[in-house]
Amino acid sequence: MNVDQQDGEFTSYAAAARQQLWLQAFMLCDDRHEADDLVQDTLSVLYCKWAVLARHDALGGYARTVLTRLFQSSRRRLRWRREVSLGVLPEVRQDGGDAADLRVSLLGAVGRLPPRQRSVIVLRYWGDLSIEQAADALGVSPGTVVSQASKALATLRKSCADLH
Image 1 (cartoon, one colour):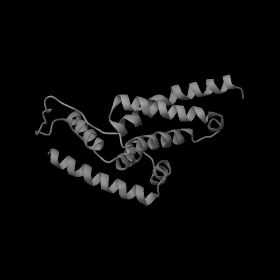
Image 2 (tube, one colour):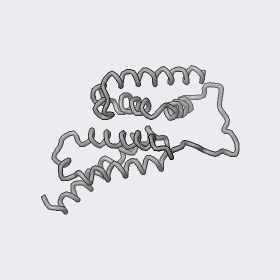
Image 3 (cartoon, helix red, strand yellow):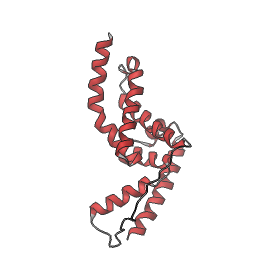
């Protein structure tokens, strides 16, 4: 296969996979611009290995794994800080709100989870992966996925109870 053919195949794959990768990235980092960067970095890694990857059936799983590991790696850097300056504190509704408000609150609670727990929640419950698939994507044991999911769900339950 020549270089032009490889580039064409990669371009087709990237166009088809970009939306799904971006949604996963956004669920992980809760920031549109950072999600764009994560997807771009993921596609860069895939492009560098495309000659080998193009022949594999599990390309979507590999892309999810790369994206998740890039996200977790970015959180390990000492220079990373999640700091947002606000002139005025936002109002917090105490009446429970409707389903859209609950969704926003839940997404906020997911965004406050530690990176590993957030990754497990996104892969298991949003990405609908099995415990073993999530463990493979994260490079950890299935027991770690179970324990991290349990801790994350307990934190989310407490956050949701605080909303009511």
